Image (spheres, rainbow, N blue to C red):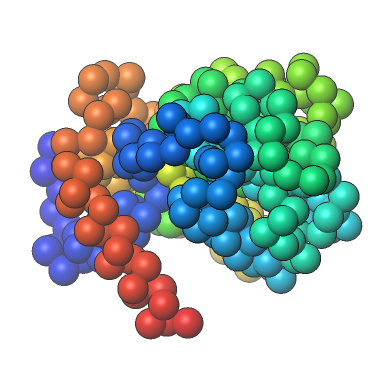
Length: 291
Ligand SMILES: [Zn+2]
């Protein structure tokens, strides 16, 4: 289905959407042949540690993490994961704090203990190879919905529909356990954002930055919805035909959304990874200009 979006609007939307699309194979696994120590000191690892630290600072500044709460991880090649340690504020992370783990959760490099919630991240990586980075945190509005066991309704806020779509809510399990990690497994293929009941939120994407953006988008959506409810007017839904355009766009971009049929067309983006890489760069430049 063709969308009726103007070329200029389409360009803007594609830049935004591409920023959160998970591209299979977008990261060249340059380090997987290396030993753990070589992988941990590779250029790619240095850049990823820096990205984790920047994301951690943003989570803390936006009050999405409290105490030592929240955790961030990213895949490094095919065999390894870089993750945040336990008992460190996400606002105070240093490169030496970041742990290198294998896909079973064994620490291979780093002086600190890994986060106990790495099992949750590993479950996501196992369930969906398109997930290359995971951010878990406790933003107040999102967590309020997790406590209530529900999500803001779909069809009201464009950014929510474009970047996220329907959000799953897990059953409650004790954090840090294998049973807790497994609660997300049924949802990971079709949801990039999942509420952990009575706990918080977890988002996956192709990069740490994009996963962190999803936490911001959902938190803002929760807050906006609650404010809109207080205005006292009936809430206006996005027209059905416009929602169809959004879904058609997501299908074309290969964005996860449980409303899309699970077809080969939905699973594979029709645009090339080079085109998407260019859109990512445009989005990054736009954000830097805005800063
Ligand atoms: Zn947590």
